[in-house]
Length: 223
Image (cartoon, rainbow, N blue to C red; front, side, top):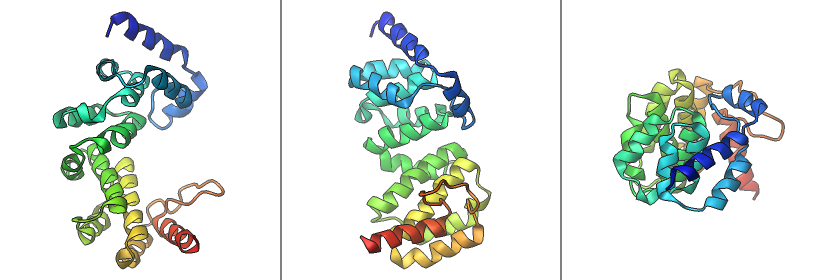
């Protein structure tokens, strides 16, 4: 990949910067002001380019890293490479896209899920819990659901925000997908009161686990 091409892409991303959007994003820890629809349009034009993806990631620029995640080949990353990338991902959107678009589609997803969930770094642990929540919903075989509830009950209340959110999502998925554990999941949510007062727009479901669980189960029953 030529330096001219990379420099041209960096200039293109810089030209897409919107100061107002950056100000909004920075409130959530994301240091970029690029409209994500426009970023996806750039990725669609470039198509899949693994070598370019690695070069863009190495710039340490948030918008460039988001673009890198859209044009990479998830199965070409090694386990240790993905682990290092996650630990470098401090912008929440980069962290989220790396887990959602790359790690979950990697052959190392389960190995990393297991390792990350117990990691002492709460940002890393949140990635493990995000993958666990997805597995609870889609492929729960082999998971110790009572054990997960024990850990959530003991740790979620005082967990840092990103980790707390991922654990809460896992709690809700257990309650939604597994009727035998629903009462306990709701009870844990009611007692811990995590995200109970989270501002929720009209027509959106609250992330407070008891409300979330009951609403989705109601919809499923009505379907």
